[in-house]
Image (cartoon, rainbow, N blue to C red; front, side):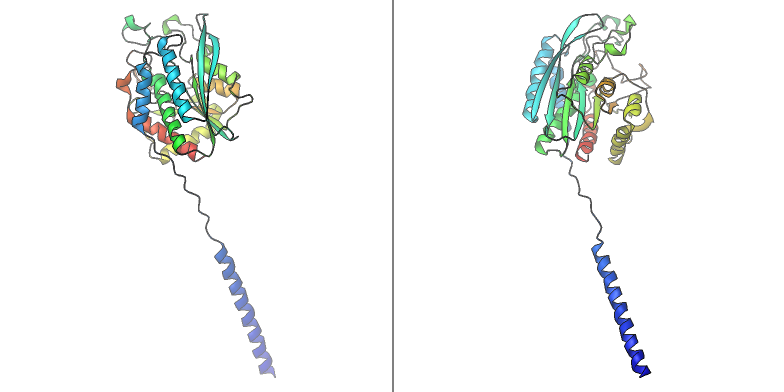
Length: 332
């Protein structure tokens, strides 16, 4: 009887242990690793971006109030109308440093306008009326082509817009091209005020194209087309939008562009993003080529000179900037 009882007990214990083991195996089989969906980022065509830069420059200096400016406005509006869901030309008036009231036009192209989660991409499309840093004093009141200072950022954004039509991003995107950005006083007048610059961005930041407009963050492109750019972490970008600054630089480094997007602090630059941060309250950064080793000790060698023409535009620089921005947009 004792043997039978012991045998029964052994059978019960074995059965219980087997059940526990089977239960454990069942739990393990359910714990499958979660795979993050791979985001396919569209190809950035550097030849296309280069063409867009060259086309702008072909009109001549895009100084507000000139025929070249009007012709380029029509072309830009037509291209964005071709690529985007909606295009708005925001007409405004602003007083320049010389107390003259001038007409300006900001261009706004929107993608996925119904999406509340939005990214703001910016550049300026006008060119400077004065080559006040030209080595030849006789040229310092000559309007510049602005191939890098203005047209390069617009060219990158136009190519991104074209890619958006081929593969729509999941987020909403607004591209804003500011006018009257570069009509600050010539250096020799020694009358610097931050408010003399970025007149189009000041107006838009106070009067956005959509009432109550907001975006998760903004990225400004300025001077992104010269060979071997060095994009350092600009000062106001660090102060206003450090999280997004680090996000963009981390993306660039993951893509192998750490030699261009350098993990090094740069100076604070009074640029369009400052007014977007201060007035529109949208955390915004500035991707800007900062070169302390240049003769002007801040920007690329031909900044605000007649030498800022197509001869200095490098397709690889446009490509690097475009790939990084597309990766940020499609992975957000």
